[in-house]
Length: 223
Length: 223
DNA sequence: ACTAATATTCAGATTTTCTTCAGAATCATT
DNA sequence: AATGATTCTGAAGAAAATCTGAATATTAGT
Image (cartoon, rainbow over all chains, first blue to last red; front, side):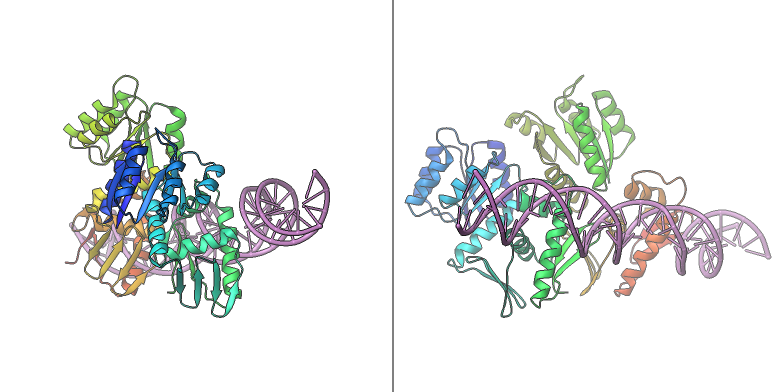
């Protein structure tokens, strides 16, 4: 799997590259607009990490260019400004995901895995876990034949759980993934969403796969 | 796990300390060069957070000193200047990681966990001892195929035992590592946790590797 | 047999998580 | 823009899990 990192901060791009290399990806770095365009012209990447704020040209221009070349599939935007505006613009222009700095490398890893999964499933990405079934394209969730109406947060939460199934997930990790920032130690909202998600899934006939691990977090598993 | 925070900005060092304390680390603060050196001389830390820009001496001097004393293992450099130069110098001098201000506390937490993991288990996240298996990333403990649910203290205790296997461990050392302070000679709590840990592991089918050494402490070994 | 150290039990104390709910924020519709 | 519906958030109290230390029993060393 090849990944292009478009990022001008050397320290950051290198630590990303080091990490991804250790995760068995092969990594290219482009630190300015021209290099980025050239690299995307001559290579085919499975995933492109794109910093919005670049010297010598707004990163969104690159994204626009990629879209014209039909190469915008698999782009994850990285941005220091956590502005909704940028996020919307980016996603409108065809980015697959959005990550605001600073972020955990493990978080980045999860997003890349998700993007690659989405790409390789040919747009028809369905995740199943026993009777539970999630169509990530249409965002429809079903338990057996029963369809489950989830709110956005509940859906994101479920997706995060299921793509990290059988692993212990800390509340900090959940906060980081769903809110993009730490929540100053107040996890009430997480508790509430988890409660609501549990209820909806169980009302639809599913078992409670969300196991609480006291003092540590949660684990999504069937045992 | 003991952590030393070398940082002159009171506001920052205190918020780091508060956070890390909430994350079950025990924290010391050194706000100047001399204190930092003294603390590292008299104590043994699992991780040291080192601000480069200190009053009364460059932080890199401290790092150099630590390296001479063979204590530079587990140092994370914190720096306002995000210069590649500093990073390279720091990593050359034996720092384990580099974090530029400002950062998320959860990010810091992840780095600390990584450093400690690397220190104790050479980066390997899975520790095995006969049928016993600990995945330190997911915090899942199994004996053969049976998974064992441990509480936080039990898990920390087991991790401490196993990373000091075949060595005699005093109760004071346990107190220091799990509570970060001495317990005023009252080890009742340790006794209780050890009893509970033993029971859980043996219920899962493991042998009792925790050997009591009368008057001395404990030794985790299979013979 | 005696003493000191460790093990076991167990009942609060403490911490964490769950649940409910009301107000705030967001979204859709007019 | 105003309205109403939905969703999100965080406070408050309840419930559950864990931690702690005292009381008691057992074991090791002399």
